[in-house]
Length: 166
Image (tube, rainbow, N blue to C red; front, side, top):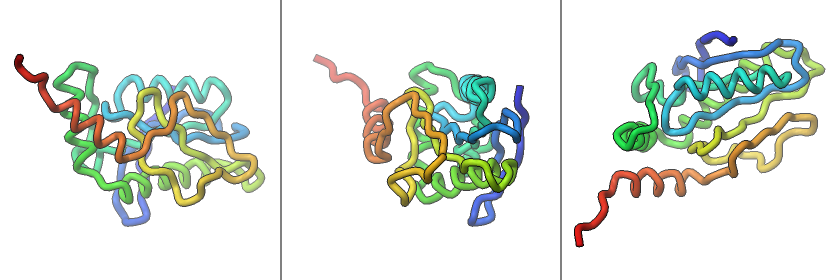
């Protein structure tokens, strides 16, 4: 079981995150949420990565819009999640993911591998960081294929549309 921590992004914004795992882990992972916020599934995934030996953290990326967002999986929740995602810009999301990675780095010794981002299953990850390749020794796990922010926006937009009447 993990715990909730507070992170500070480069622009000074404070956000919460769920963190699990030992500081003596060989590598760290930032577990990026889907459009459902920092819900029970994100905590479970973070705990699972911790049980597999990683120091894992899942930042609450919707905190910039509304704190404590935890959505379910109904069509209404999907629409709400899309609305929250559309209110964020990629630069903010990247800063929040970087704050989570920095938190992991602060927990690790200097000889340990740095953290990297892993999108959650079915996730809506931010645009990739400036470096297309993680540093040597970085743990990278990707349960789902990476999706561009543009594709994520299209999914959110199409999820709001209703079927045409015939």
